[in-house]
Figure 1 (tube, one colour):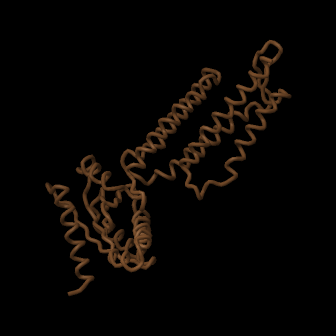
Figure 2 (cartoon, rainbow, N blue to C red):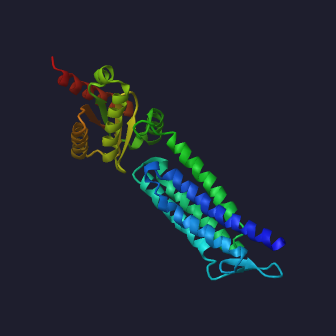
Figure 3 (cartoon, rainbow, N blue to C red):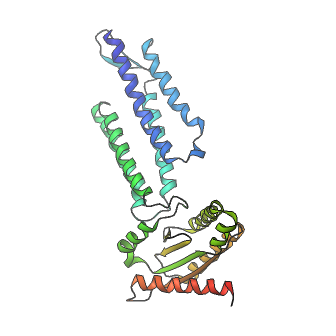
Length: 289
């Protein structure tokens, strides 16, 4: 009957909005953190919606095919809102420590979620699915574009991002730290490239742990890393470098580090060269005469 198909399409629509946001949440959340309980609200939403086939406890259509909402009708809105809030929180945790345009990803997501909620309010829910679909696609494009700036092995920003950011934020960079792993070639030759990749991953993690809103970390080559600082507090920079060395040492590896403060009227390229030079000087000292 016509009533059956109206209920069926309503059930599909209500569950689409829930699963669309849940799908985005799974994109943001790392595989090891995708807990089974995240499915529970979606399953509850599905079960509540299906009651419309035999009861009006959630929603239904009367003999004139007019829509009405039952006492549990709010579930179809509460569950998507729960997933939207979870998505915003997960996105904030993932991007809050990043710099540049990446900081605005949560804001973009929030704006589109608010647009979806507004359209649902003023249009009676007729455009919420479309709004969620548009925001999901846009959010995914932004997420994908930002992940293209990431080094797949270490999670730090990659070489392309480094050159782009030097152009975009160059005037605001006040110090540079150059980092190079010691003994990578020997490790690759004796234990294989998998062990070398493992070492680089751990070093990347150690660098990532000290990055904050005043700095950006990059892997620009095989075992070459760079940190751009947006402050010139040398004591803090030295503390950061020491922390990296200590953390790396805990995994049984070592790095050589050099830094340079950018003097007035000095080009960023020159600052980077000085930083590299000091890093190589430390590496030579470690090797000995």
